[in-house]
Image 1: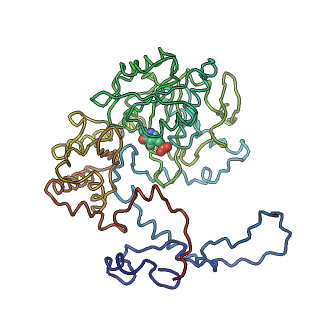
Image 2: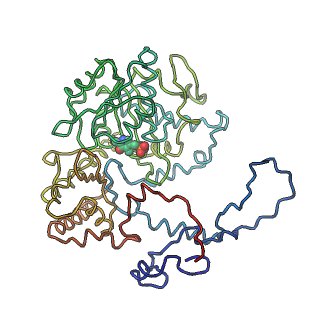
Image 3: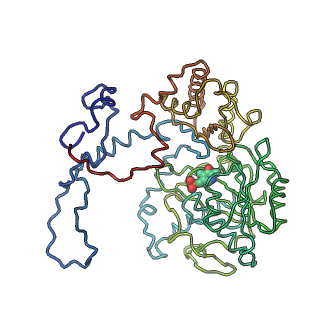
Length: 514
Ligand SMILES: *Cc1c(COP(=O)(O)O)cnc(C)c1O
């Protein structure tokens, strides 16, 4: 509806299909853009006209109206509440997005993060007034070091990709200290890597040399040795990899990389599969980011900022970015420079995502070491349960072997149906599920990557499996309509995602009156 109380969607098509005057279907409401709902010439607040003043903006003063829609408070609240009801969320249902670890965010974490002593901190407060916050960051850092068996940790990166950048900048700083940063300019990256890995390398001026995986989905030490040369700065290897497999040659790979004078960056976004079981420090890793928003259950996917601390080996520890927490007891401080350190600089203005640190530490302390280990074991068990329950209907490139925390299928089983991975994923929306990750990793044709996580009950997994089995049998049994038209029950039908990506319309334009 717009502010005149009329439906803003064109009548016909959509409205007719929905079959109501308003276009709403009970709780499923049509929601217009905020610009269509509000009035550009009105305001929802009553501000007094300012006293006359001399503007200091000069030529920068705004000359045209700002164009913000005016809404009353209830209109603004309703707009966002209605929009939020169109979101799929981990609090609404199972969210099997592979490589994303969409696990439950325990409410205890939220309660802790809202304690005023943490929630109301300002990053510029005097250091003497934030001793508890520094102690918390330090406690989380120690926990991460214990879980990873590494020597140092940089807490400030704000996402996995930012952590990659931090780790690779640390590696570059270490190479510079050896006088080899100009000669070592290549990063080895396996074909199955997350797109952020080559992007990170490119961002700091390094070029990428691809390393192929073996037919069984993992990288061999021989393939790495063949790609190693005096120009190699580092390898970026994901473990478990994005096919959901443990890189079982990882120790030999680390040895070969070190023997060639290069560093081993491990993409640790999938730490949820090995936490409490394997320590990257024991595998020869030099730097690894940890996605607190994946493994340690802090919200993500539009739900809040991420946090990507980077753990470092003894070799790289001296080059960790500033600042570091120093001191003991009630006399903690943030040091820009300190003994034995050659920090390359800072990753961000402040010291990281405080709210995420509180949530992650709450998660760690409430689980304990045994609980964290069980979380990984249950995550792997859930993924294998899904894999084993679907393998008779759906094809899996490495399906004859147990997987880690995610089960990977391909589209060979759809070959004679005329349906695609996308059709199958869209049909899941009609059944009330967020689709799994599709078409990633790129090395597998029509990939469907399912990560159920440890936080689903067996009943929840069983319903999900039965739903996918029903869909798979429908696909194999010729129920084309159920797939090619899907989703039919979502607020919008199948969107032209390619066009949306290629020609995004990011700005609302006032329609010209007909
Ligand atoms: C999620 C993920 C990343 C990137 O993490 P962001 O926090 O989204 O930047 C990198 N690598 C892998 C394997 C991932 O799954």
